[in-house]
Amino acid sequence: MKKIYIILLVLTVCGACFALFVLAALGATGKDSVMTSTKTEPIYNHFPDLPETSEIKWCSKSSGGIGLVTTTIYIFAFYDKDVTGELHEMTISKEAAELDMYYMPDEVKGQKWRAVEDAPFAFQTGIKDTRKMNTTVYSNELGTILYVKAIGD
Image (cartoon, rainbow, N blue to C red):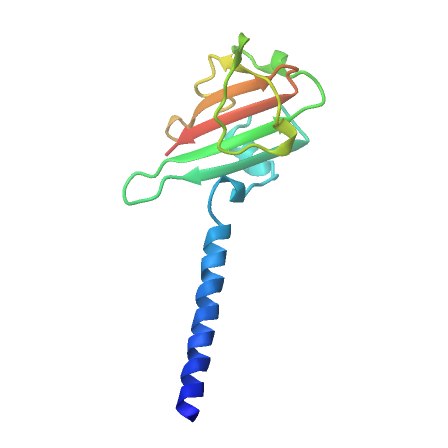
């Protein structure tokens, strides 16, 4: 009789552990669980020419697997004024752009975006060519938010 209680206790503990594992795995998947950062130093270390901002939100993801790993960084930089005049040698499209964003903070929901043209390696003056990331840049209509999607090895 004592063996039955021990077996039931072990099965109960194993079942509870399995349930916690499943709940943790379900809670950590999808775009809603993207780990974000507000630290500016890592961004300005790689994008030193990004106009100075007091608020930045960003996240990154890497392709998994064996071999070449590609990293994508998604950056939202927030400004109190229109910074499109500070985007040297880049032009702002007059037409609205449709974006498929991997990560979207609450502050940018409902914004209308315009593509920033001539920005394949934006904000990376002084960065070695082997460390540069290909960038796609967008500005909201007011020029107060920049969205940068950077892809590199």
